[in-house]
Length: 433
Ligand SMILES: NC(=O)c1ccc[n+]([C@@H]2O[C@H](COP(=O)([O-])OP(=O)(O)OC[C@H]3O[C@@H](n4cnc5c(N)ncnc54)[C@H](OP(=O)(O)O)[C@@H]3O)[C@@H](O)[C@H]2O)c1
Image (cartoon, rainbow, N blue to C red; front, top):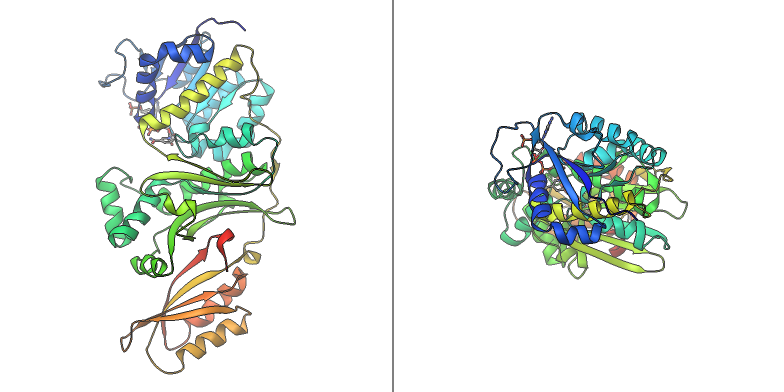
């Protein structure tokens, strides 16, 4: 293996890029040792080259033209940390087509353009690393692709959005409602000014499609993921859940059914307090994996932040550098097959349904009747509040088809005594009654 210095173009000097530049300078010798030779930053692309960049080596040249920098003849490795799918996508594809190694942390790009990126990497024998695109610092993708390569994975369930996990755990611990917890997360820098991609489940759906490719070999577009965010989760739901030893987490779930069909979904989920995923609090992330031979595994750690994410990017840099020097690996498996997805209506789950109703005789029977007409079997019902208007009834169903529950709840919502079907929360698949 040759050990000439490899030249690295760094596209983006934001949270992650600046941390990466500073780590490469601070730990250059140790990283060179692992990478089989030095990694030299030859320039960085930013929107505003004139801006001061504390922590970034002053000698690092800045350019506002990421394409030109990436395609420079002498550049071996392109690290894309700009974000977005437009220009970032064009540059990454051009770099791969030019046979350069690419490392990116860009989940939106990898999730929405994986087929093209993987094909380019394969066609041009160009290593491509994207470990940081899912769950920040956690080396889950390499574990799925390399360490578990000899196993068969049945299900992956991830807490992959730190913003949502922060909000849900603050609602749980401090009794805050969604808006108050979101405001707190924004003040502390755990949520963006526009939090929609996080709280509406889009970000988790991106990460889920990447996990599904690596864990299940199933290729699907992020739009194919059934998703429900956390805006509809009420403080009451968390209180009621705690009374029966459950917590609520936004899970991104990919699983293979007995018929081979793949289910991809993101939704708030009731998780038993004793399950390892329930112990994931605040902005932390975790990826839970159920493998046939290995059994259950959980990978836990920081899902975001400049330095933690830079750690995963550096790991990829070392891996692709080894490959550029003639080693093996680091070109993603291009063999993912277009996933045959399950019919969402046929999906089954045990569900907690909260209904706000008038406290009058016959309501319970009317709701139970609607459930029964659609074949939804009720395991229990608890009334919260008495002689109030409304009172809350929480029904726990046995495992039922989602289409049947939808139809039952449409009927329940139309009953005169029912003010509102206030929430429905699915129980985590491996914890259903
Ligand atoms: N932050 C995290 O915790 C985290 C975690 C996991 C993955 N990621 C992913 O990592 C990537 C970077 O995230 P970040 O938080 O570091 O982003 P960021 O702080 O917004 O930084 C983006 C950087 O890219 C530069 N840039 C943007 N558009 C550009 C353009 N058209 N031309 C040249 N430079 C451009 C910006 O330049 P200026 O500085 O001049 O504006 C900035 O330096 C994203 O794909 C993100 O999803 C981030």
